Image (cartoon, rainbow, N blue to C red; front, side):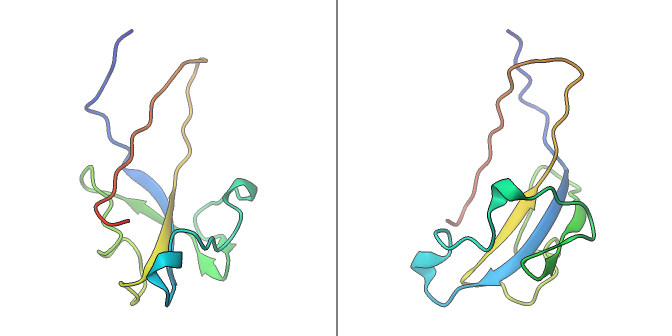
Length: 100
């Protein structure tokens, strides 16, 4: 099986940020049930608007201008994308974080 490792998803829908006073709850406290959403740019979820974001590089910096919110600490944000294939296949999606 061929593996392509030099492809990065650059088109995202972003939502946030959601402040949390207790840093231990930032990841544990969900703002909505992710399995119940089908976002599109401009739609609202949990009082916030999904923003279309096209990253100029392989990184989506949620502390940068991608998330249009003044809250930058003790908070969470969501990144969502749709993946489509013209045929059935097995795929691997790798994501990473440098904070949480």
